Length: 231
Image 1 (cartoon, rainbow, N blue to C red):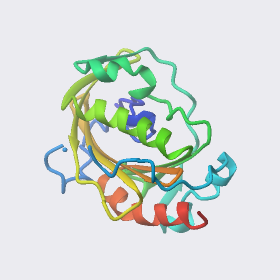
Image 2: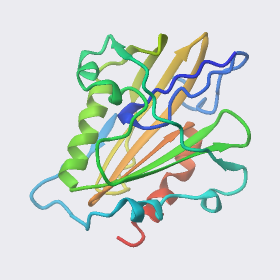
Image 3: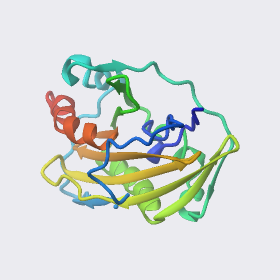
Image 4: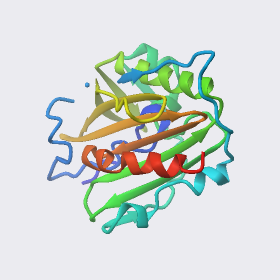
């Protein structure tokens, strides 16, 4: 039995995509306890760069050649239209269903790629957005703040309940202008999946990498380097 629930923080795609009935994803074992940290703050002197088109963002996403062997590009999933209820986290519930499931951040210029690794349940997702630095910063901070303001809550999507635990993680301060990071544990059907999510704003570009914690740590730096190479 596989329980499929499209749940995302920040409306991003990494989530409880498949909970195996016979095993728990232990890619994130180095994070035994499921903790968002934000550094930097936009100001009048914030660094602005040119806003990029969706086509330009698409060309800056990591591909299989960047990731190395063993990665498969996953086809884009159709939009989810299940009724979504957030229980136990009023601030997140007020943001609407897309903040908890299935959508993307509400920036018009965006690009996304999802990869599976080694035929296992390990996955990694990359999203790029471009807008003014203030809009990017405010949008990410609002949702990260709502999620990590509720250490535990439940999401019911399409009638399937999933328990969520959120935990702030130290943000990678050396990367970009602002950073956010968190660890999420999704539990449903007696199984759990751990997802790490890290967001980096560099000027007018926002990078979000999420998925199995070890894969996020491995590829975050190269994702930011490629995304900002021509900035």
